[in-house]
Length: 164
Image 1 (tube, rainbow, N blue to C red):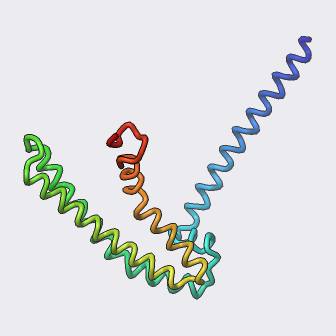
Image 2: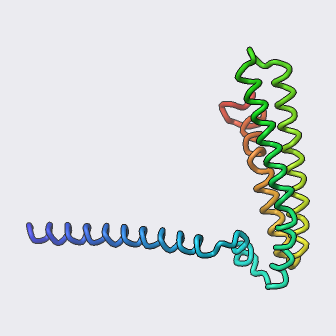
Image 3: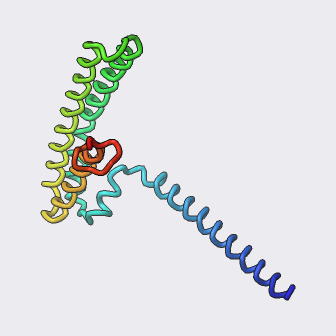
């Protein structure tokens, strides 16, 4: 009985060691792959099996869009700081806070419109089926976060936060 217990214990320890080593090795390989790549569009080539010519065109679009993206992010960040400053000094929802909130929302909507326009251009540089799949995923990611919140808050949901 004691021998069976020792064998069982040894098998469990060995199994745990193998699982742990596999996990650590996987983490290191993923980190090395990400660090070695240095190419933020490598995933796009792999996921959509794009040719060198397609990737070259997409890189041009990406590099052309990045300054506009950075500008959008800077404008939103600055407006959010203004909003935060107003909220810190306001007693309740002051008209100025509502105005700043609307300004942040407007900038975010402009940013989303710019992103969707860029994603449409990128999708046109891909083979048709890949382009449709890419555009659908980018639309889901761009619009999905707010839609999830809106869906949980809508009247026809069973969420405790929904209006029943």
